Image (cartoon, rainbow, N blue to C red; front, side, top):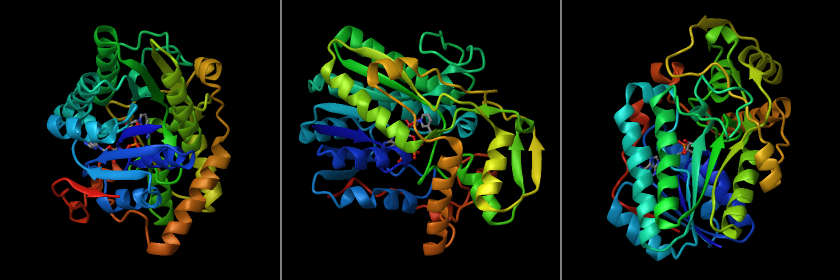
Length: 355
Ligand code: NAD
């Protein structure tokens, strides 16, 4: 299949690209190396995929209508996989407009281009954050999810709703995937697990929000990728189609328990500094995945102990090879925001292409 993938230089997108290439698909990828975290990390994420003759990469911004139309036409894609976004709950509290621009405007540009160029199949990466603090756990796709607790969550819900509108008025087939706290090799550097691992390795105290009682449904990246590929196949064979699926591990892990697993796995103890839950963070996430099980054959396979062990292997191997995986770690990163060391980042040049 020929696929148009946004955000393929990111954490989940780069794993997805590799899985699709491994099964013989052609992947045309657009990513603008958004400076949320270091460009060098994203270039490294792309390295494996770039070995494939069936992978094409263009550096560009999916808010650019003319560019998106030109590239989508050129790709002759049968489906759009829209994983690109400004991700992360906490930084969205400071920059709602930036999140709307990337996640809402960007999504409508892609939906319109898909409609106009007759690319009927559209997969949208949404988020468990749409469930906010009011939904009953475990979260089911049927719940209203109309009280987002952060600007990021609101932009993801808006993306789902725009996709629904284009399904309704223009006949696009759509699948929205609500990912639950994804982790594994290449995880974004500001996310829990990666950030804790880095601070553990550096002997720094760990800042624990919500007094350690927050719960997250941590989902290993290979499970999310398998679910995404299954959802793509479902999307391709289903017409008409508008479906929303939770892709989680279907287990809650308390932050305190995660910290135990991490400290045991890395064989280090750290001083824990407890702080109040930051604005935008929800109390818990917990996926009901029965719909994905039923319609996609989705089955999460990697539990938290095994997942953290695999993450630690990757983390240590990278540290051994090239020093700390992510040098940038200023106050922004410590509070869950983007790396503060902007000198590590280069602004994306004009559209550049690599094969
Ligand atoms: P990521 O930041 O690693 O990847 C996102 C990619 O999108 C980046 O490479 C970035 O450069 C690119 N991008 C951003 N704005 C762009 C633009 N205007 N034009 C082109 N490219 C642009 O994030 P991730 O963790 O891999 O998340 C992937 C998707 O999954 C996102 O849509 C995110 O919202 C969603 N999601 C992730 C998680 C998680 O736990 N990681 C959970 C729920 C939802």
